[in-house]
Length: 157
Image (cartoon, rainbow, N blue to C red; front, side):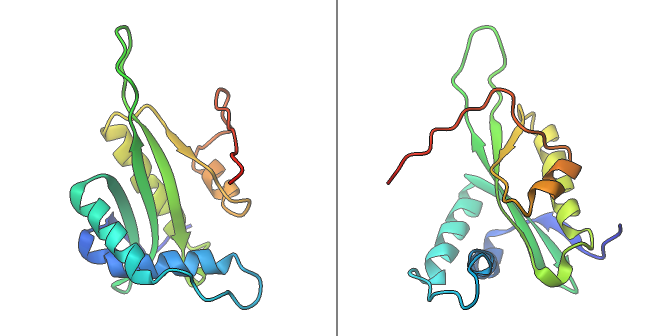
């Protein structure tokens, strides 16, 4: 499968488009007419701009015809120093989204490949993700596997 999408690192100046896509991504999960967002998209725009600007988060975008059509975000999870082993961070993969018009054309796979290349070159210990039912097959085709050691404790709020 080939794609015409170009994948590149996201920049703080992409924050508005990334925030709008984030809102589209979350509304897509609602059946029928999505509710009116409780938060303005500008809140997400500021959050994304701040984190991309100061390096707390990294992201990659896929572009077709000069327009962003997909993205994936990465947050480093630091590990406590230890005396007998490396304490390289893990990468938490999140907010992976491709516009419906560009799905199954290779943009998603290209985004994950760019993310994996970055993770390897940065010396990360591994990547973790909580995939949706819909995205699980793509993650698995990209090499992600069910964890052997991870436990989760959902907290009721």
